[in-house]
Image (cartoon, rainbow, N blue to C red; front, side, top):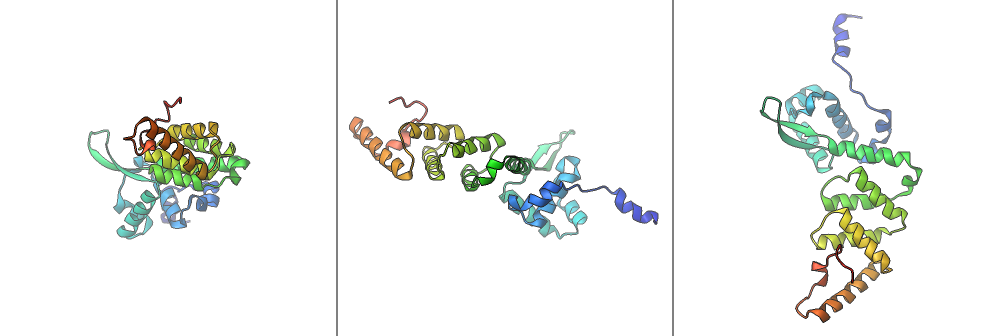
Length: 223
């Protein structure tokens, strides 16, 4: 073989795990988005954000590259961050933690047959509410709720309750679900009935309180 052709192979390889190639659609990625992610993962050099390099390497227009970056950022797979390098100079890098977290969750799903029957909608709802990708530990907490036969309906009500109180973390939501479980609350109708009772209780104690649930402390309630 002519040596000039060998040069193509010496430039390096892009490795795509077969597992990801078979399952990328479960991450709700288009094939071209998936290939772009794998390219970024493989280029090394701390994943420096260099659109012109990406454009040249992939044979894409610069606008196409920026389109992929925008789409993958919106989907929670990447973030473009500014950091100091070893020389103390600021540089832009692509953070792939979102991608790696999503892949970890996908592997966990595939590795546990019970997970295959879990509707992922609730995970997406919470990610959207939190505005970020769930960690593997958070995923396990939510999965435990479902395995304890907590309905998605009730979990969504707990998310609303936490958001209404200005809190966005699973510990708070878990406490709400625990208290509701003790009270026998299982549906959105039960939640609404409970809310009315608490409002009435608060009104009896303080006629100036109109929205009891706003300042309800789920961590300190022992009543």
